[in-house]
Length: 497
Image (cartoon, rainbow, N blue to C red; front, top):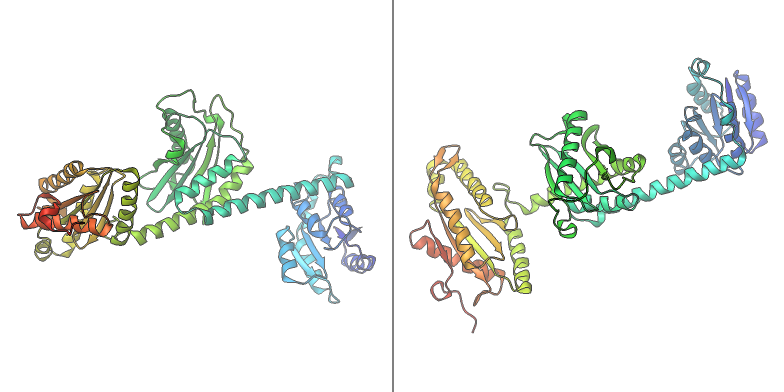
């Protein structure tokens, strides 16, 4: 078996060469990194020993080059060096070395490493064809390949660094995914991109529109990806399937119903995302029949591998954030967060000179429900009430639990008359059908008080809530199961002079 020994020290070449020959190996020597690489290509030895400090190319560069070339990547490499610092050893393994041995008087560790890496190599080498002539490289070719590889590694490291920045610069899951597509757009051209991600029971398909496409294009793209996942990795599909969301709608504009762009399955590039050995989704980009896709598979795989970690962390962060602002029972916002959102809504209302309404609701005789049917049934009542509210309001409305059986509904760009309609709709739905609970169906009614901003004496979030609460109190005092609007003359909130 042949061993390539590369070192710029003639003493090492003689001493180690003699040791290896005494063990039955044929030794090929090289005195610099370029010569070592050339002989590795031309001679294709069974084992390579590289010093780190050598002229022209150091051992790490030679190792990285050989491990990235198909003709030589299977040859085991031992870094044999006097450098014994942990940093040097770490870097040696990062460049692809199979063993890292420190030079010394005791040759036992070196012989042990050589024997370990050459066991079975003779039989394996016997079945290999002789190296072809085009594998023989000159010094210029070796240096050019090494520089190209270093450029590629630098490019890859830069992309990984930029992907990593997404984890620190962006706050929400959607912003992180959008930022990932923005970064990808710097490296290629595509009409739209989709990230499908599943975690537990939930799954999302987030689409980023880069060029002008219509709803038909996006629908075809979605069906194509759903079929691909079902065909290749059905185990990754969440129980409820994938929900669909268009990112950056404010920046993208309204997606037109029709257009010239036509989805082309042949103009797509897709990689599956893996986490902890499981497929958790995919990353895909697509062109259309008029505009070619310009994104190579290797670049997309780079984003897929390193982007998965960032996306998953963003998802987990989002879940933790939601837990901190959400009521655990009803899954609506908690009191602290709803008060923050109300303050923000008041600022926007002032800025845009738009009406803002607030509804406070309370379950009538809720203590009686708990005493008669039990607290679990009471919890079911509150959860079902929030479901009724969700189906009766807009996505832009803000729903939160203020405390106990009291809930707040913030209605942006809604005047008193509009708020009255929404509140009455919710009240009527609650009264019309008994709520399903663990104790059976229970008839429920609610009382609601509402206030509208701007109004006399309502200039803060606290005053706004107080006004709605006073209206709610009057609704309960006047018989319950009704909607009452705040009246400063009746409800007694102090007025500004």
